[in-house]
Structures are given as C-alpha cells and as structure tokens.
Image (cartoon, rainbow, N blue to C red):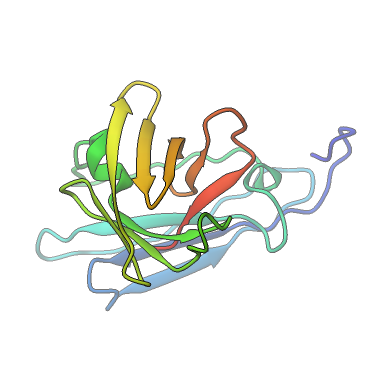
Length: 167
C-alpha cells in the first residue's frame, strides 16, 4: 500500500542459496492488490546451511515490499540467533566523514576496528538489549545503534546511517 492506502505494484525478490553459493534460486514476487507467493523446493541429501534473503523492490523501501511470511518445512533446523557482539562483526562503508576518514571499516570479533586507510580504533558493546555500541577512532567517540542488515546508525536519529553494512 502507498502512504495514502491505495494499492501499488510491488515486486520484492527472494533468494535462497547455500553457503558456497553453488546453489542459488531466485524468485521475484509481483502483486498489486492480492498477496502472492513463491515456493522453492529442494531435496538436500546432506545437512546444508542455506541462507534466505528478501530484497526490496528496486528503488523502494523494505516496507514498500509489503508484509512477508516465510515458512520452511521438512527436516529444517534453524541456528540460534547471533549475539549482539557477533551481529556487529563485518565490513562497513562510512556514510559520513570523521577526521578525513572515509575508507571501508572492518569490525573484528575482538573489538578492534580497522579502516582500509590503516586507521585503527575499537568498538565495544554498550547495551545488548538496545544494540548500542561505542565506537572510537582517531579523535572520535561515537554512540551508535546497530540495525542488523542495515548498519550502525546515529543513536538519536535512526534514519542517519553512520556505517552501512556491506559484508
């Protein structure tokens, strides 16, 4: 639905892949007024870790893809959710410049932060329940909130992405 409640065409893409990306299946679901669905069938002979990704319509917001429900059947096992420390580990692109630092940043499991330029810093979990982190490097001390899959945002304004998740 649009902001005014009128139906609008939506086409999110769903991708299912294995860990090595040797098996990738992609479906685009398009709908206007009625809900739509896609089924991905597989017969895995051995335990295989699979990842499911839902991509919003091109140029749209995630919410413009509509409500989503995912159902997995068969001999399915889900991993336990990642801890707040595990969630933040990865590579990010800075979306604002701090002390001339705008190169890619890698958040390591040990609390170390390294920029592609060589600048070293550190990150620390401040509050697990609200996913707040303290990030320090050069002359900067930032209080950021993690939105999984999106990145680290300003703790006072979640619309301002400070570090966008890339990997």
